Length: 580
Image 1 (cartoon, one colour):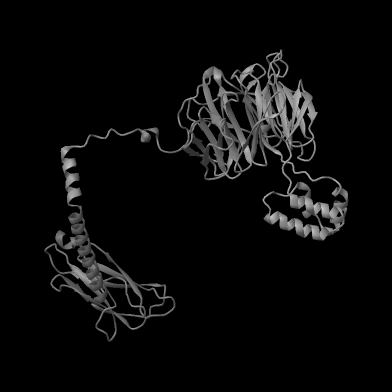
Image 2 (cartoon, one colour; image 1 turned 30 degrees about the horizontal axis):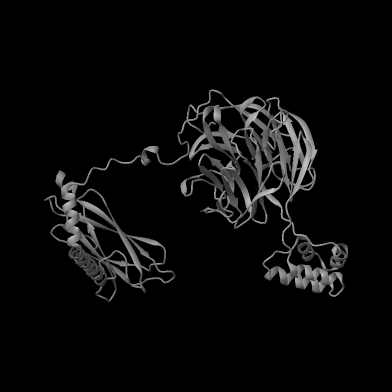
């Protein structure tokens, strides 16, 4: 918390850190629940293992591993929920894995629910029937399946997709192995949540809400595990947040793979509202009536049905979770970043910044053991961290992020419109055309005068840069000395790319009553491109009146009267004569 202002430091106590706990998981596969009914919450984790093997359901009590069970497939979501009214009130654990929901009660397998199969393409079925009867060979079958994949509305089954990815010498063996089995098209679960059935009590019976790869959302009955409601989305859901009661009114907020946020209501099987994001969402948390979304463009955004605010983060978002502390009436959002930091936000205000030894991959906040304000994090290297919120911690809504001060958003006390302002507005409305014409006429005259002066300067070479393409020259003058004798240095430069300039001369025009020059006419040697040639001469002031004048410098080509460029030098007052 060292980066925050004074008074916002040390809000968290370091309770436990095990860098070699071997936990590889995400926020969607972590939950806290009282699995024994003794008032002490346990940590339930769906461990991904190596990604191919070692997937387990682990339960932690305090700092020790209490139990673990092997999972058959990678977990995509984990929730603890009450599925009945039996005493003692012990929640069940539902683990989403592949197309199935595995329900554990008392840490033992209790029920397995499998998603209903999807419609199979009839043309695909006909192709497999033909190869089964020997009417076509595997190569012909591959061509036909490729055509179906490109044109058909119904996607191919996993079996056909796997067949298309095989090499030619492997196709025949694959066909012989699978041709006798019926074709099935099965979707998989992408996210899972819980929805209270009829009461909002903390231990009320909850339904399971499942998002699938087939762009559907199902609500399951907690006792019979039948589908109570089915809703469709324009794209597969990736994150889900649920509020309300199924029998009364509910709202399901879903982040989909097309980069949009959709809201599902009880009275419709399709989204009621849609929120378009500038980039894809990586985190979704509901705080009260607002939805906080973390995006891949390193931003955190707040929505209701329209965008409320946006704040930029210092690093990409890895994970997000809600921080709800009912005892203090506090709700916020915890954001894990790729720079080994965890930020706590309330709306767009940064309230706390936690430094971690490794990148955090999952966050869970709630009651752990008998402590209400416990923050549990797992890291990319498999570590487990437990922090406890201090009871004396105070969160101020002071924005700790760099940017304009809060006073900038305060509305100014603009005075009322005066009669003079109203009269002036009416005059502008009535005479708007005439005022515009007068303004445009003055503007045109100014442009014409500027153009005439520019053309005159070009024609008479009254500029310190030559406009000639064959002899491009540049000159600046430096006057040195206090008087009555001044040293005048002219720095000449040929700006051509590779062509030298020859046969040049410099002539001076001045008031002979004020000045006298020893060499009023100078010849210039060959000017090589790119080099600066200093030409020096002495100017003597002959007047004792304390006045000065302009000396004109002309650079000419020998034999021509029109100068290539001209410079006017404002001579300083001769201080030497004034002292005399």
